Length: 183
Image (cartoon, rainbow, N blue to C red; front, side, top):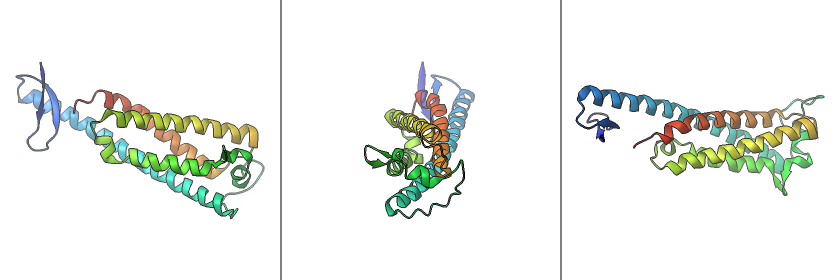
């Protein structure tokens, strides 16, 4: 029968076999500590990516609403941020895609704060997963629109797409650790 024990010095908890000696306790706590540090590394990476995506989305939103057309982006046969950000595909049901990105990344920053990764509430991990899957689905649509409908690439948008893809990889690869958590 397993029981939960708390390490007196670090305060970490681990599941160990009842009646197990100190070697089993140390091994279980070391395993928990390794998982915890790996998850915290992913949490920090996810937060950094979320903040980078938020920053780019903020820039694109400001540019969209000011009509400045001063996007720092080269314009050639393949690349044109202005062509992409002013196309009919730059709005979804009348709402700026840049603003939708800003809202998405604001929410991603919140669910990727280290405290949200440490919580024992599993629904937070599932919410994070649902959000990033939805974000990735939207990115696939946007890349399709850039390549096949607009026929131009926006480098700023690509930065958002890459941040979203990397968040997707981090979050999806972290789900097994959350479903196995006992704390």
